[in-house]
Length: 230
Image (tube, rainbow, N blue to C red; front, side):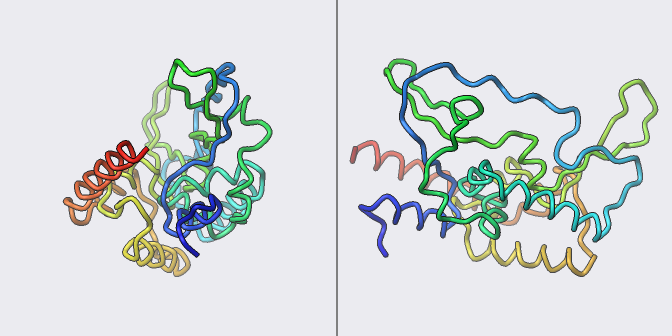
């Protein structure tokens, strides 16, 4: 199977390589959806200071995550790339990828508009709350006593902004990414995996610092090529 011209072939290969992309529908510009409600605590919610998740907690997290993947909005996670996309591919039926956005896209989705055209592109987008759930985020109290208790955000997996800036991110899900992913899963199953703050995740996924620079340069060259070709 090649890389086109059939759009389904292109979608299949992008998913297979773990590339971040979108499958949009084009429609009237309309009104941009309202921003989603902001929750005080994201993902799996608040836990008291000193909380250490157990393997049973991991099972609860997986059940909640899979329930989201099984709903219509779970499709959006397939296109997220990185860790979110990798987790989704273990659960979400890839045949859903080519079906286009959900029926609620004009109310809860994302609009891409150049500000001038009479039409815009629309697609489903993940909220911060949904991303926190997928990555297994807990807001854990630090023990500080004041009117607004401080929390530290720990997670089973790094959040997308951390992965994007890491040495693992080369623009696709490379063999090195898969090795790291399998090692992390094995550690979780052994009960030896530590949940990390996003700062700690940045440190452990740093790897070779030039990797991201190469990926950015490649993306710029690809963008220039597409601009000239189209």
